[in-house]
Length: 283
Image (cartoon, rainbow, N blue to C red):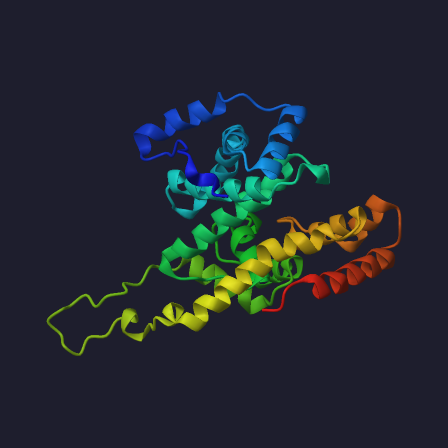
């Protein structure tokens, strides 16, 4: 099934962006019954018209989420377009039998696509390669008290909160506030001139890398969702709250939520992770 077989309204410039936002904000919202019926039609019969209605009714969600990423110097229309891709992926994988609304299910996919787009385009350099670093990248701006350089105490607090090393906080701050460096040499007349591009290798074009990347993506998306689906409701909520949410919850927060001890939450989390490990495909 190819959801994007139909045309979606895509913002294509400053002049049309306001009209696009106005248009999507006026698309009627679906009731829970309407959403469930459309999702079942899509799941059972690959009904593309049902998929279209599900997507169109949630485009305003993408706009709302994309607006939260204005501080990265990227075109808002591009952020919205990437978010729409995430929404399409969410609609394709949405299962109404899980008992959650599409809005809640789609938020993760929309943010994931926007995050990937920002990381690909932030000064043309990938500056966050691990999950804690990515979390640091997207939270450092809001956690800083002012525009001044971080003090040692402020950086240590951020490092403790996000589970990263102190030097990673300082390095990320330097990368995010430093000046851009030209990839190409500025003086073509100097045969001995070198620029950063001279030291870059195109390892990502290698077939082995592409296969590894494809396998990793499959595990992180379909494999992860399938593994989560095998957990009971409480275990799935704990894993999603601890590992997949942008604002991860602590053991004590979840303990209060379920009225058990933090140690019990840790045990449930450990057991769920072990189960998921056996279900995820090997990469």
